[in-house]
Length: 79
Image (tube, rainbow, N blue to C red; front, top):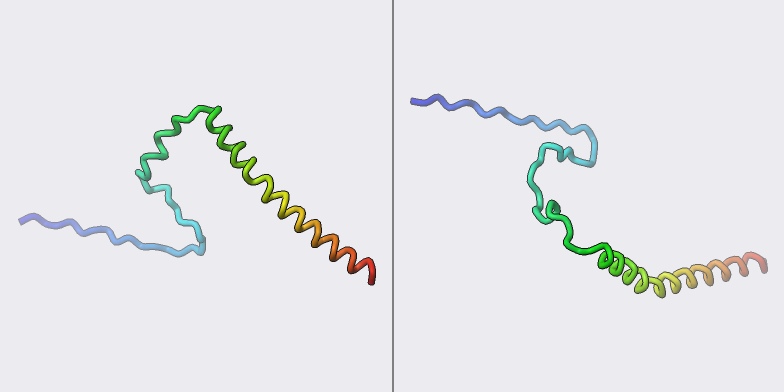
């Protein structure tokens, strides 16, 4: 008859941190280890394409904030 070895009981201690220590975890998604097959030109084209798409919405939000600031400044200047 074999004697079973007793499993070591893991004790977790809460030190109040919100971020867990993941240093002992191995493996993970395989796609992160492969890298990219895209060229630098394709990556930059994608980046600047996204920047071009967001230019008008960014200008619209900046214009709205400028108009709101001007209205509030005008109201306080007239008081």
